[in-house]
Amino acid sequence: MSARCSDSPFGTRSGPLCSRNKIAAVTLVGALSFAAPPVFAHHSASQFDNSKVVTVKGVVKEFQDSNPHSWLLVDVVDAHGHVTIWSFEAEGPEVLLRAGIRRSDLPPGTPVTISGHPMRDGRTAATWLKAVRADGKVFDPEQRGD
Image (cartoon, rainbow, N blue to C red):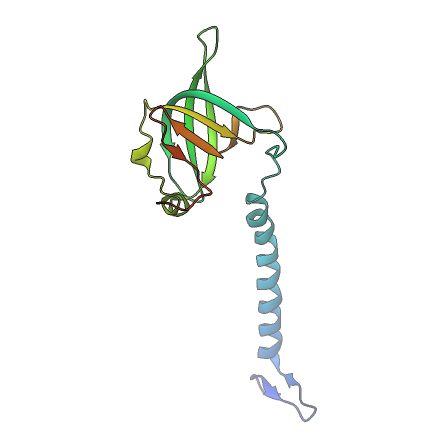
């Protein structure tokens, strides 16, 4: 028997290398199938309640424009003077740039009113729907830029 993968008279391929190739292919497909669920799970937005909208007024603490998602962190002061950090999630920097939103538009200390779909579990985070600076400039991550 040859150590090579060769054609048989029945139109199939046989030999030890063919078996090794099949095992390697099955192993690769199996490994990739285990890696796929976390990738798909990452893009789930089920943690946000799309039936509700929360609006807060505060001051930009930080604008993290990173992949795969950007975050706008806003310091919100309640009636008792306690500061709560609200985190608003948006798409990555490329999507925000296409919407005309740059990190320099919302530097730390910028007063802002921002709306989003809140977390279902009550944590102070939401998807970023619309932010409005004190000067009236609107930042909507879903819109195309100027």
